[in-house]
Image (spheres, rainbow, N blue to C red):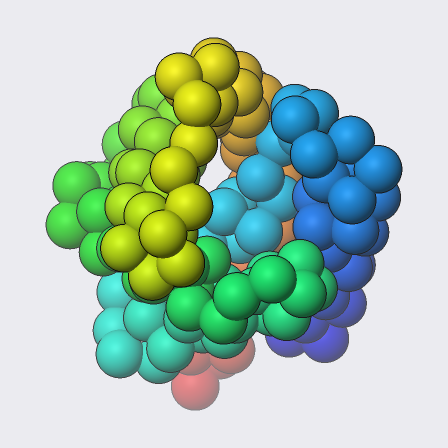
Length: 171
């Protein structure tokens, strides 16, 4: 359990450092994988509950605070992406590398669309058509790296599951 929390926290900090602060503040049109979406993806697969949705919301709000622009667009995108992953993933298949990458790619696109629509209506900011290329490249990088992030989080989950099975077998 503690290893899962530490791994999740490390990925959250890495995501904030790379995505919200370093890359996009230095180069606004730069392409960076969406590390926070990878965590939302993990929650959507393993925690299909109101607490999982709340966790996705907190991850989105964290991204909103880190970007220091507006509060809400990343949070809404994270919750919608969580709902997309939770409803479209079969537990057995979504953990597989290629499937998780494809599903994360589409979840990233969904999150980006929600973000762009909210920014359009919330702040009156419209994005140029070149932004589409950036969104697609970020979604592609997110899809490629999601199986790796799941691999980092998965051993901790399966080892705790195995310990529970062993403890129940000894009773």
